[in-house]
Image (tube, rainbow, N blue to C red):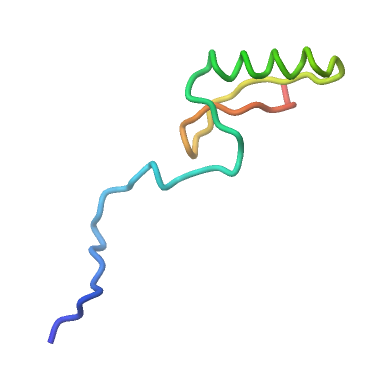
Length: 64
């Protein structure tokens, strides 16, 4: 009798399952606005924007 919980090993990769535990932004512009807002609230803070290779969304970082 065949198993009922058989998993297809050849399923295509689903990118929406790859998520980061970071605050994510849909666009570069949206992330840049968030960074500017945070830097105005805290003048000692310096943030940059980058696109994540894992989830393909935009994040903020303190690294240059």
